[in-house]
Image (cartoon, rainbow, N blue to C red; front, side):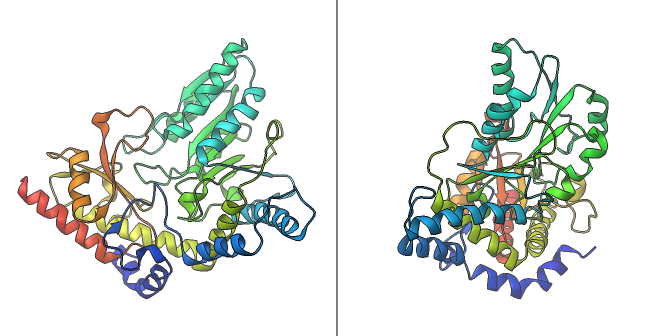
Length: 401
C-alpha cells in the first residue's frame, strides 16, 4: 500500500492542473473545506450551462421546434449517461428518475414504491445513525402504512463503535420477513466506506437494498453492478453539478417495478446539463485518482490530529496514524476539541479563512451536544491548505494544553 505522502507527491502536478479548472478558487482568500455540503464546479460544468442557456434553452417534451427537440434529447441522453456512470448492468430495464436531490429521491421512493411493496409483518432495516435524509423517509413510510392498518417492523441497523455497520450483528437480525434495507455508501460524519460490497453476503439475495450515494458519487468509483443494490440516490450539487437536481436510480430486478406517481412536470434541464457535464468531467479527470488524492489528504490531517492531545477524531481510531493499513476516510475528517465547543472552534477557523462545517451535520438522533467540526475535502484541496489548518489547530492545542 502506497503511503499517503507518496500519493500526494506522485499526484501533485496532476492535482495542480485540476485545481486550476475551478474559477471560484482562483485568488480565493480562504480555503474551502466543506465539499460534503456542496462541491465547487469546474469550468467545464459552468461552460456547459452557459452554452445551453445562451444557445438552446427550452422545455423538454413540450414543443416541436428545434430547441425543444434538442432539450428533450438532452434529457434522455443524460439519463443514459447516468446509467453508464453507475455501471448499470441492465440499462434497458432500469429507470432514472430526476428529482431535486438525495432527500427528495429517498422520500419519493418511500412514498411512491415502498408503501406498496410491504405487507403486514414485514421488516425493514434503517440506519438510525446516518444522515436524517436516510432515516425520516422510512419512518414516514411506516406511519403511512400504519394508517392503512399495515404494521411493519423497523429494525435498527447495528453499528461498530468505530461507526461502521456491524455486519456480523446484522446477520443475526435479518429474517425471512426482511424486505428492505436502507444503507449509506460513505458516512457523512465518519467519512468511511460502509462496506456495502459485503452486504449481500449477510442479507442474502432477496431483500431490496437502497443506497444513499450522496457522499460517494464523484469521490470514488460507484458501481451498482458490483455493489448489487436496487436503488441509488444522489444529489447533483455534491457531485459538482448545479443545486436542485438529483437522481433516483431503480434497477427493477427485485420487488415491484418502480415508477414515479403522478404528473412529473418540467424537468430541471439546466441541472441535467450541469450533471452530464460533471459526469464527463469526472471520467476525464479520473475518479480513481480523485479518491487517491482525497484519501491521502485526509490521512495527512488525521495523522497530524493524532499527535495533538486536545483533539479527538470521530470514527475508527486505528486509521489515524500515517502508517495505518486500516481503510482510510474518504475525504471527510470530523473531530472535536476537548476544551473548545465545536461552534466556537468553527468560528475561529472561519476567522482564519477555513470554511468548515461545525454542528451536528444533520445526523439522525444527534443533539446539540453532539456537534463537531467537519473538514470535507475534494480534489481541488491542496497539501498546503491542510498544513496551514494543522498549524492553526496545533496552536490552539498548545494554548489549551
